[in-house]
Length: 99
Image (cartoon, rainbow, N blue to C red; front, side):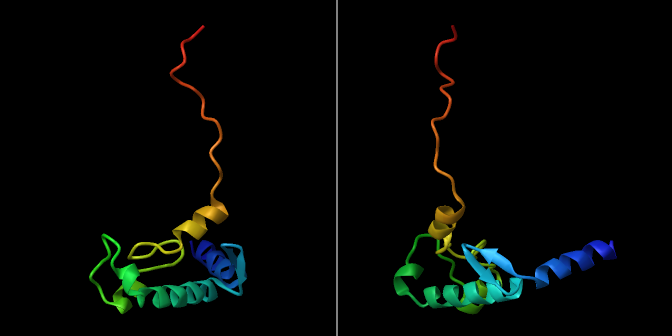
C-alpha cells in the first residue's frame, strides 16, 4: 500500500495541466486558483448569487479545491465546460416507430 501512496505523491510533485495551463505542481495549481477565487469572493455581485453560503472567505477557501470544486457557486464552471466539454451531437431518436 505504501508503494501506491508513494507513487501518487511522486505524480503530484510533477507538472500538472489544468484548463489549458501548466503548473509546476498540484500545489501550484491549487494556489493559483485559490488566489483567483479569493479575488472573486470580494465581488459583492458574486455574493448575491442565489444559494451563496454565509461562511467567511477563509472558510470557503479552506473547503474549496478550485477549479474542480468550490464551496460556493463555481466561477470556473463556464471555463471548465468550455475547455473539457464536448458539443452535443444528434442523439438517437428513441421515439421513432420501429420498422
